[in-house]
Image (spheres, rainbow, N blue to C red):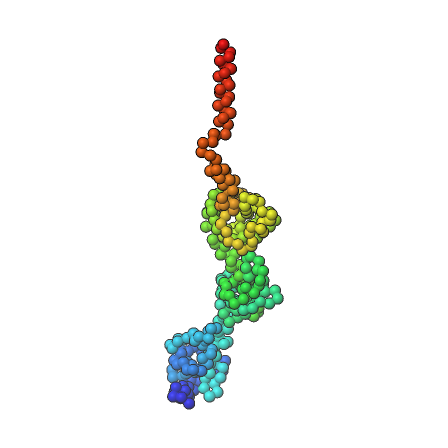
Length: 307
């Protein structure tokens, strides 16, 4: 036994006689020593208890307490010393916090652990939750696996049986964020404005472009290119990031018309410029020769009339 382990054993043995506690009792204490496997917790007077270091670690395996920190734990054994556990206390605290978040509509962070039939397993703090496929994003996800391993912000939409049955939604959180930013986005959507956007969906007659804040505008197929494409899908795809020009805003109908070709060079104007550039410098302007001959004919006729 190492010197450090002997010190721990001596301190722990001395604490047994200092305070009488009962199994199942919840007590507060202060971390006074942290060893390789166990830590000592001062629980009042000269009384000290031990707790496994594993119970003082976070999900990443790092010790989340320091000397002098106070913790709350449950007495799980008094045989040969006082042994504590935080499992029950930590779970109860977590459940209270999650229930409060559910009732207050607060956002919580969660990590997507895996995908299964119908949705995702999400770990929030030390609890597990379920997120339906339709609630992981605003846009439809073609490959559900892309979300696995990522940490997102969720809203708890169902909380039952003391937290053992919990349903969460990332979509609700995203929609709330969009509503917050919608007012700022609307002020920038005016005819002539050039804005960034994301292709939200593609339909037969065009594409709907997400301009931010949940606001979408229509990019009609006739406004995509100067040469009309066969289908909208030949020009854009869902998820594409592009820059568009606001053509019209109908606030009454809530419609926004967008253009893409207006930010491209018009080939017709390019063709006209090219034709002008190839014309000989000394060539008469169109109609000039005919005008000159006509004037000469008029003069001859006038002279004949006078003779």
